[in-house]
Amino acid sequence: MKVDFKYEQPLDEIVAEVLRMETILESEQAEAMTQIGKEIKTQVKNILPKSDEKGKHMRDDIKVTVQGKKAKTGITGVTVHGGRDTAFKWHLLDDGTRNPDGSVHTPAIHFTSKAMQAATPRIEQIINEIERKVTS
Image (cartoon, rainbow, N blue to C red; front, top):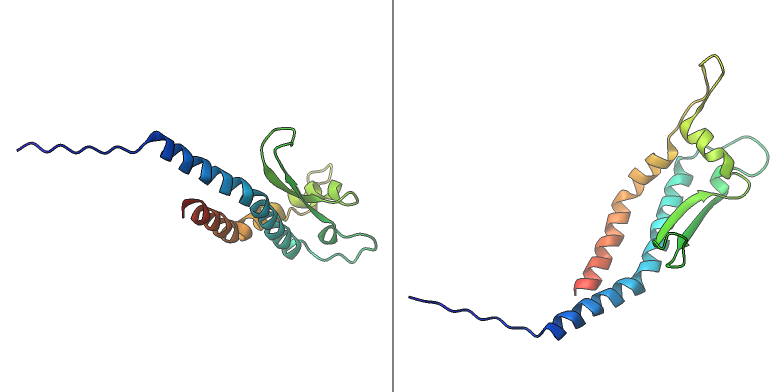
C-alpha cells in the first residue's frame, strides 16, 4: 500500500507570517526592555544598603537606559547603572576593596549579580508574554 502525502503552502504566506511576527516583536521590544530595566533597578535598590552618609546615595541614583537600533553596537539592550554622582562607586561596593596589606577594607556585596538573580523570574515572565503575543 502506497500513501502519498502532499502538503503545499505558498511561500508568500510563510514570509508574511514571519514578517508579522517581526513587526509585533519590534513594537513590543522597547516596552519590554523598559520593564526589564525597571525590575532590575528595583532589585538593585532593594539590595543596596542604606547609607548614613550625607549626600547622594547609590540606591537613590540608579539609572535605566534602553539602547535602540541607533546604539553604537547596533544591539538593542538595557543598561542599569549608577547615575553621574555615584557611578564610580558601583564596582567598589560590588567587588569590594582591599588594603595594601591584603586585608579587606570594603567587603564585596555582589549586589549586581544578586539583583539579576532576583529579577530573573520577572524577566522570564516578560519574555514569555512577548512570545505569546508574537506566536498568537
